[in-house]
Length: 105
Image (cartoon, rainbow, N blue to C red; front, side, top):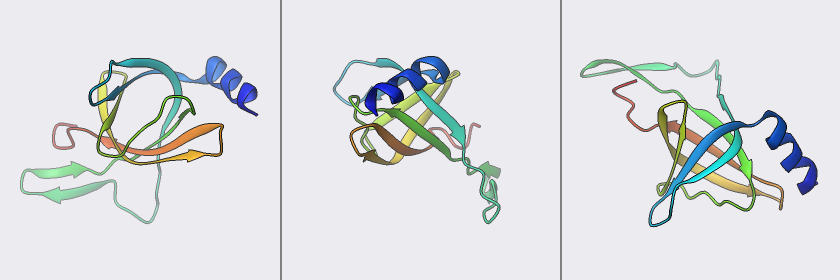
């Protein structure tokens, strides 16, 4: 299963950079896509106007760990913070990301 997963990432994954406190930046391939939730508003009011509540799904290689609150992912000149991350079997990481600077996006 791991070989098939790596093959899918190599063929279809997006180029991202993973940052973990105290470690070097790691370029890798992962799947990133917006989480569309019909039950939740994507923009919420704040003192400065509307603020995005975007969430993104991350699926990445198992050998490069993520930690909620300590890991960041950069993709297409945008920075995301890891809200939660879980290793799925031995095949891949599943994580929920939010834009790092929510007020600016």
